[in-house]
Amino acid sequence: MLTFFLIVLEIIILMGLGIAFLLLGLPLLFTGAPFMPSYRKNRKDVLDGLLVIAKKENVKKIVDIGSGDGRVVIEFARQGFESYGIEFNPLLVWYSRYKIKRENLKNAHIIRGDFWKINLSQYDLVYLFQLNYVNALLTDKFKKELKTGAIIASAGFPMFDFDLIKQEGIFWVYRR
Ligand SMILES: C[S@@+](CC[C@H](N)C(=O)[O-])C[C@H]1O[C@@H](n2cnc3c(N)ncnc32)[C@H](O)[C@@H]1O
Image (cartoon, rainbow, N blue to C red):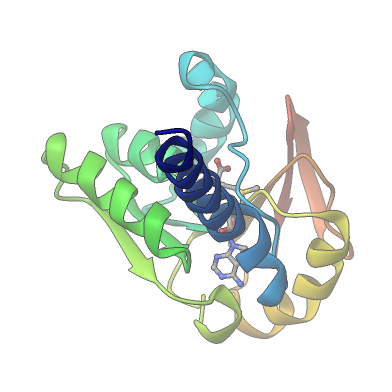
């Protein structure tokens, strides 16, 4: 009986480690931050200031690069924006798509892939919550791909070499 219990415990621990690796370890192989949402579920008001800027700047199409569980993509879609997320973690892709389907949001889409390999020229606003060194590495990609006037909204960490429009709550908001 004790042996059986220990085997079950071992399986549970291994499964836990597997999930932890999927969420935390995998992203590091792709040069990107591990999953951590930019705001808590009950604090979506954090986005209010950014939504005001996006509306004022006539933004139509947004993308969250490294979209995690899709909360940002979903909130922008609820506000009427054509909203995309790029995420390579299959678990998070599945969960985001499940939430989008549950709300029947036709203007929210999750692309499964590596944002380094996806061209960003079609978007009016790029949202990111990555790490300082990833932001630095993204400078070249943004300069090459983003259209002039596109908005960059970086949660948590500043970007480099772009014109700061405003520092709004947790966001540094720039214009390409
Ligand atoms: C800090 S979380 C941010 C989640 C979400 N954007 C938010 O603000 O709540 C970073 C996300 O980026 C994803 N990620 C990291 N590197 C990536 C890459 N190269 N391509 C696609 N997704 C990536 C991770 O899996 C993780 O979900």
